Length: 403
Image (tube, rainbow, N blue to C red; front, side, top):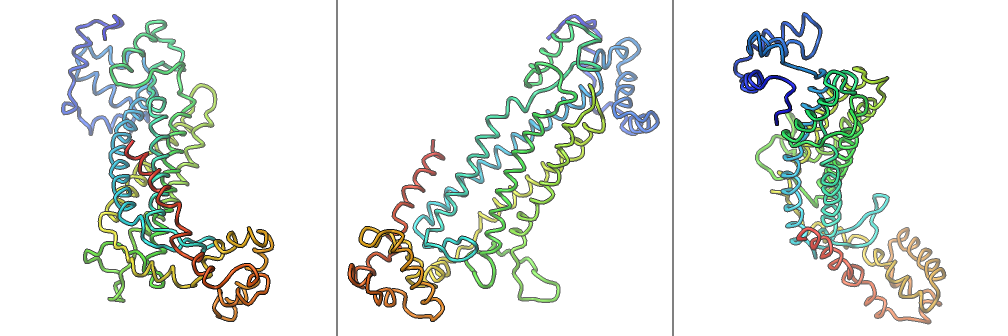
């Protein structure tokens, strides 16, 4: 949009400058000599534009206007990529959730067996968590993609009221949000955005860490797709879950980069390069690391090896002990919940130590034998009963995906 700030003829000349016309080596040389991040480009554009139009290059702007808005345009490109990758990831998780919705799987708390669930339920939880990240990224998108063109200290001192009109028109042309007031010294929108990326990275790392654990020789419940990768230069038999490891390991540099980005909020006065250069350093790193996590996890899910038999075996490892909660709740109506818990705790711990049959030991307790029978307890101690709510929970997650 034309605002009459510079002659239309020179504006056309500047707009029609082509990237291919730029001498990158000369730009680099000038930037090095002048120790200024943008001056080399400004002078090169001035030279190409010619004596008249060249005088209007970078007219009324400050370097940080250009750099910050350019950074936001890069974020916009990443938004599109993340939206596509997250859509693909959600589809993969949804498909696997449906496939393994009824597959017995042993839940753990404190890293030891808890109660049986299904592998589909595990995947549904992760799917739901990923969807929350998608929702947050969507909610903050417009606010994140806010440019700036406000001059030296953000007050439009060079162009005055015309500067406000130019900024509004420029942001509309770039499909960016127009600021209320310059954010040269307040990149909180970008830091909030990277904060969400850091949380997304944590979720992806958590999935990688769990799948890494499941790929251990002892568990053998999951494995990465094997495409001929060599696991060791000295141990030919190794098939290592290295992609799961990498997805999990990337959490640490993501967290470090986000901590660095927090320092970008500590700008002094109206502008401070110590603060804004943290964005230059750390934001690209977060983008690269999260991108790598997403692409790796999608690839692993495409060929994920699921050992259903091993999952079933692990569910059965402790026998009926894993149904102690169900039995406790069954006996609560007859003995009281706290009393039932105390009895079951003592019997369960003794059964574990002595490696005896849990239900037989439980029936040896006089209070229990008085209110139930072994056959009745065997009915209560069942995978179907303890997982009865899971299909509904999975359906709720999948309904949100369809919606």
